[in-house]
Length: 64
Image (cartoon, rainbow, N blue to C red; front, side):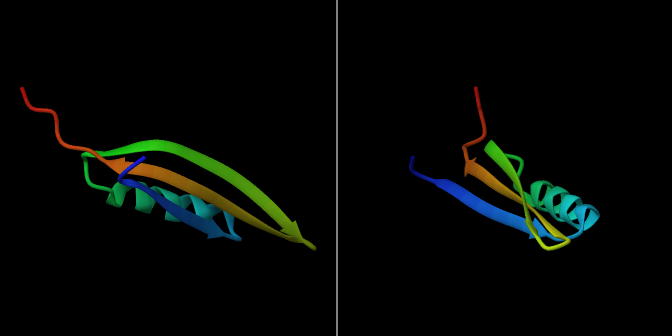
């Protein structure tokens, strides 16, 4: 699909991860359409990494 974009956001701390994800979503222009957000966690020893893949597309503002 033309114009589709992806952004990967990750952090080891769940609060930092949530903050990064929220700040990124808020930074998108109002005419951006979020198509999908996929979440994942991975473990390495006692360390957990949280990740989200945001799929979005810029669309034209609706005018009548």
